[in-house]
Length: 232
Image (cartoon, rainbow, N blue to C red):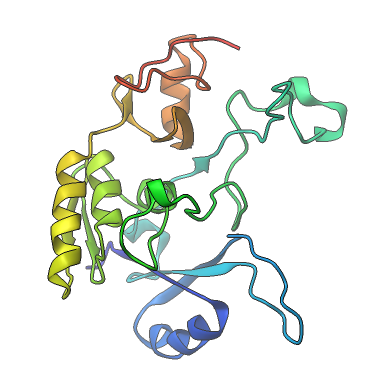
């Protein structure tokens, strides 16, 4: 599709091989380094990040969608203060958080069994939601040719997008159907946002401006209806 985007996720070694083909049929935009965490094992440089290659079908920025994204300021869990000093200008920091760069340290791998489906390569929903918010609008179609247990489809449904998933394993298909059926849209004041454990993880810059008009805070949310409930 002329207005479409493609994201390919893997360790850097394999992405370098995929690029040999992708560079012939699409236009490279960004290499996103997702810092998933890991411990060095010696004798080799253990990959401590996954790469996400971002390509578009069209060369011109006018022909494909891209939206500025913000993520929340890193805060101390005990005192709720900013972890970053901002050069002594914390009072001038953005009300929600900085604009997104191509290094993502704030979304982690799924480590707890209770949040993991029966799939060895399951990705966290907030990661997929961030990619979807960055490059699609409500009602757009999201395709995952390796659907697994349906994480991409769940993320798409939560953000009001249509989705198509392809999966060969019938057991995974059953899990994916169950997961997508249970997924609910996450909105604040009519705007789709990525919410995890009651906190916003990703939102569009333009949507922040509209939501902020409500004079509410974007930190603590009612987990049932996703409305702003408390101010800082």
